[in-house]
Length: 165
Figure 1 (cartoon, rainbow, N blue to C red):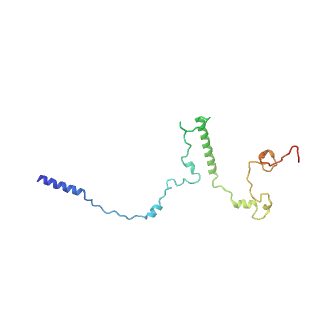
Figure 2 (figure 1 turned 60 degrees about the horizontal axis):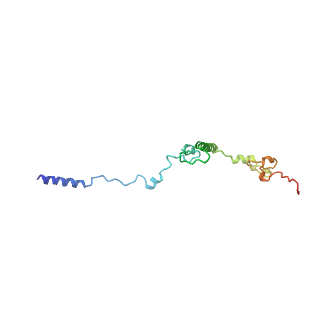
Figure 3 (figure 1 turned 135 degrees about the horizontal axis):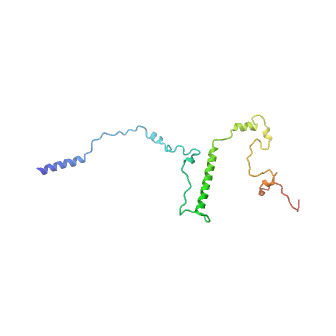
């Protein structure tokens, strides 16, 4: 009798282990549509200003460190090469900061138009540059000062010594 009572209790316990537990049914309804949920994902939220002009200074950009296995040009020591790389990085940063400082500054076309005089008269048309602003160049291309003009251009007074004229 004891054995049959233990066997009956064991069978009830093992049968109840495989019976699913009663749960409240979960709702499958979404609070917002799937498209709305996907389209509202903002992957740029943590770095929202990373593509703005001048944002390079906020990023962790740096020249890599030289190790024992790094390339060092022949004829330079590791310290000399590191100094060259540091100078180049500093020059690059200074140039970027200079360009960022110029951002948003531009020439207003209306001021240029009024200064040129094209709003009232056409005397600008007879000028050598016809109202255009001329770019500054490294050399003097007028030919007036031969020392300021590169020789390879052929601009300037070319004097022939002897021979036919």
